[in-house]
Picture 1 (cartoon, helix red, strand yellow):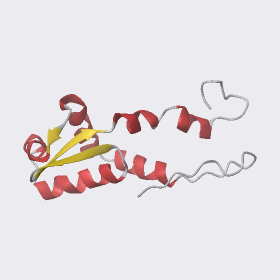
Picture 2 (cartoon, one colour):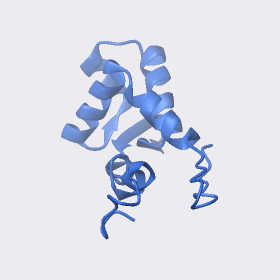
Picture 3 (spheres, helix red, strand yellow):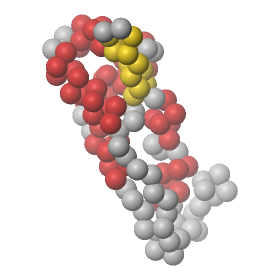
Picture 4 (tube, one colour):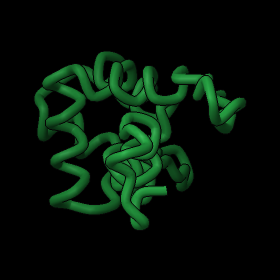
Length: 115
């Protein structure tokens, strides 16, 4: 599970980047980006339907889904024997939002809407 650690010292800006590393690693794969796109277009979808869409064995698809789940970029709901997936839009929207821009902007450039 990814842990959130705030900026430790404003003067040195020591930040734990591990949560961002996992998210960007998850995004650094074309197949996972395609999965996220399909979830964006279709909403909540069964893993069996995703396997058909991508013409991929469920075991291989599950590998990609687990990486996206562990990064918090998608959500899973189990109904009976099937798992349904949807995009975690809040987390995806946070990736390049003020939360992340705040870390990489210098004090001179920070605006009131950044942090």
